[in-house]
Length: 245
Image (cartoon, rainbow, N blue to C red; front, side, top):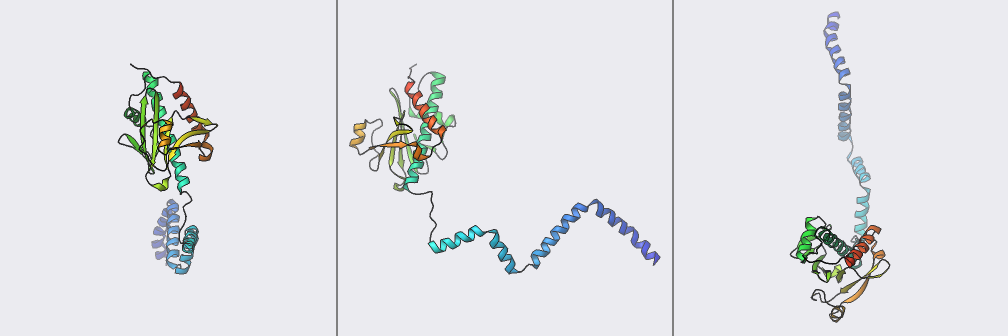
């Protein structure tokens, strides 16, 4: 008996020393082992109940979709898409204004062509999100944006043509934007032709079916900085005078 005690004493002491040294690791291993055993021993019913608790929203959505047939996307419809296109046109107009401002500040001359303005917008990383350059204009997920520019008398236009009718009417913006009231600007819109010549007169646009519309910024929920940018760019563009080399 005494011999057996001496035989087991040394390995037991070694195990105790190891256990003390690596107690944290052994504890973690024990927790993992308990979790694995619990998973294997759990019944299918309890596991299904656990899954339902983890994903109540998906279950609710599924039940509603079965009752209603479809789930309506609240961020859709002609009015929403039109407001979105108004914002992207305004953002592009601000980007073009800033690019022209930097060109004028550096060289005291305006760009001579629309292609130069587009190149400056891209090189200065001013292109708004979701808008890409296409040929001598721009494109977004909802619109083809035609850009026209002239240096004297200074003016540029953005014509936003919807890719599909559900995205709203065609819209024409002229910069500097004509201010018609507090936080309100004038632009043109049409549900018909979009083949007018750049910089057509108001009478010519009216004869082709274009209507004058008011852009109420408050309705579009633009923040104060966007409103200030539009107004500041408008004032600068009106005051700046082109110079020739």
